Image (cartoon, rainbow, N blue to C red; front, side, top):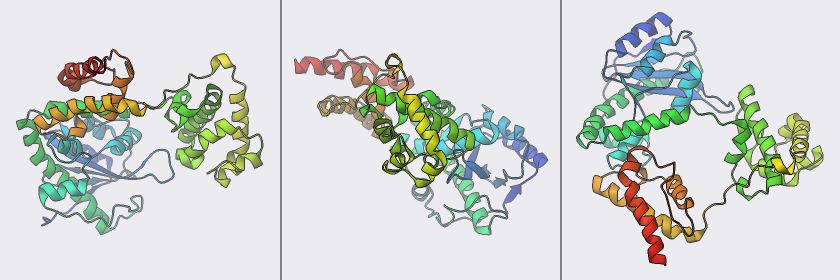
Length: 382
């Protein structure tokens, strides 16, 4: 059953925001959520910020506030835990809006995994399981930039903040009792640090799917195009795929069209892109073709072969057994990219070592067991 909400306050004044932020800084935690629009832009556009303290939910209008210093102080206050759920995009919102990121951060989705619930658990399901409340979904795709917001939007947004605070009050003591709070906060600190890292345009080609299939000469062309796409998307605040679809990147680098007509025949090439960016793309292709062989990017590593699956499974089992022992969702113990990185340290003949990607408490907890599993597998094979 849904509990009634107190009258929701909308903050649209700098002085009022400062007063509330001072109040929130006196508390042990605040629940924070954002509503934003990101359909065609590179950066998310903040439409609303919600803050709940367990007693009241307050909404902040980012279209009206001009002084974000008080919120920055709250987000960065080490004495106040900031509670969010599956917050990767929320972090982008705060970074763009006020240049700050929440710390310390308690992510309720991650907390659910540490408590042995499903990995990557959705907010509605978490609320349903722990609070026995079924959340309406009518406003999920709302226009949060419209003003005034509808009564339904205000209610939906306020409830999100209220329920986040309620979830924290249930989950935080359970994590503390299990001795897992430090692990959670270490993981979210890494997430916050990673969210502040920006893709270097010159390295954007490394993030293109299927780029590993390309020869170095093709990679030289891809590098030039992908770097332009990354720079221009940010400069124009346009979604990468609206500027130039990712599925066209490798075909462009391999086929290297030399006319607008040939460009238009590239699979998945939008006619708008040919009209607006065609001449630029042709110039970029010529620029990539002019790169000297000595300056070609190195070939990207191929995916691990199927034959490596046996070792991957052996390593994964190390994490699964530890997760079982501690009642943690197994997916959280060892991520696929960490396991693959370890296999790459010695595949196929070994010896294997711990990869840089295995850090913090996982390295301390599982490092020796992983080394034994990998290198003992070599002895068995021999």
